[in-house]
Length: 267
Image (cartoon, rainbow, N blue to C red; front, side):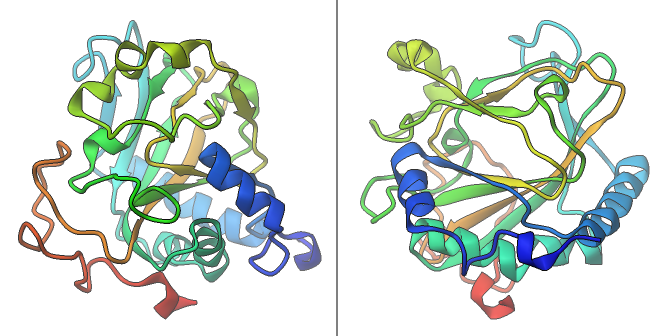
């Protein structure tokens, strides 16, 4: 059983951690969930991966993938436990402290990097996918961040993520930024920070920060829940991004419908 006093909470999140997130574009936060919370969510995640309709990032959708599967995922699982995790008051309040703005939950995904025939996750940024402007006209210079909760231990050998600090600061992303080292080749030579996690730990990353992950070289699947939170005032703009789903709002409207709840309403 986890000792609640050992957990990272919004109350003990330091000013230094907040400043580092805004300067670097990511945060490595240990021990956010209790052991009991991890166990419940991992059971549900495994169940959904076994029976849910999965999508995959592999050579069929990305010719740069040499072999194997980068990852597979279940979008928006209809799981009460994982919904609670995506809107967990501890998680969402940390996210709002890191960004300094009110947030909405946009979507969550169960993600698995399989323990056989997995591939590296190539360096990329998330912003080119999202249908909103990712400009620097906000105090934290962004419109969204991803909270990535480890539901299994994720050492380096299991494909933990690495980040290029400060890479979120730069020109407005374009669709060509899928191949980020082609459009910003100088970043390939910047230092990288690798963030192994114990189960229940988290990373938060800005939509514009360059991140990547190694292959899973262990005999255990890497399983996590990734949740995207958006600035509460984010406006749908289909001229940005490649997402094709019906978001439920019209171009020029804020994403302020029940589908994208304010996280503060669940804290």
